Image 1 (tube, rainbow, N blue to C red):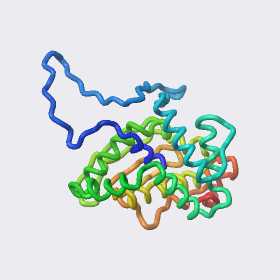
Image 2 (cartoon, rainbow, N blue to C red):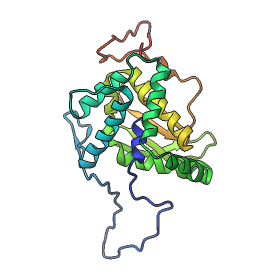
Image 3 (cartoon, rainbow, N blue to C red):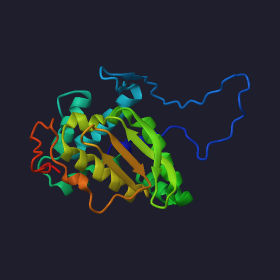
Length: 256
C-alpha cells in the first residue's frame, strides 16, 4: 500500500532525462534531486536516519487516511499517523485475509483516475521490456513515500536473466510495520495488495521483502513474487500487542 501513494503526485521527472549543458562556473559540479516537500533527514538517538514530514507529506497522509476510512467505515479519534495505524487495524477486523487484501487494493485504486492506470499499463509498462516503468516507480517511490515508510533509497535489483535495473527501493526501517506492530497488517494491508496492485493495475511486477527482525524492507520492481511466499508464515512480532512470538514452535501470526 505504501508504494501506490508515490504516483498520486509524481515529481517532474522526464524519461529519458533531458540533456543539460554543464555549468562550467562550478569547479566541483554536483547533481541534486529535489523533492517538493523539502524536509531534511535527521537521525534518532540510535544514529538511524529519521524523516521529518513536510506540508505535502501531511496532505498525502490525509488523502490516504480518508480513503482507508471510506473503505473501513470507521475513523479514529487520534490525529495524524497514530490515527492512520488505528484505521489500518480496523480494516482487518471482521474480514478474512483475502477480503482485507481486496479492500486494500480498492483503496489503492481509488487514489488514481482509472484511465491513468490503464494508460500507464498500456503505454509505459511495455517500454524497454518493462525497465522504464519499473525504474520510474522506484524513483518516485523513494522521493514521495518517506512520510509513510521512513527513509528509503533507490538501489539495484538483479533480474533472473542476469541483468540489473535501478528499480529497487530499500526502506531502512519501515515506520508502517514498526507502528502497526503486526505481521498480518504488514502482509494483508501492504505487501500482498501492493504487489497485486502494481502488477494488475499498472503492469509492473513487484516483490516486497519485509524483514521482521530489523523492520527494513526491500522493494524489487520488475520482479515477480514467488508462488510460495514464506513471509506469510512468519510468527508474531515480539512487539505485537495482541500475541506473543513463540520461537520454539514458530506459530505464524494469526492475522497473516
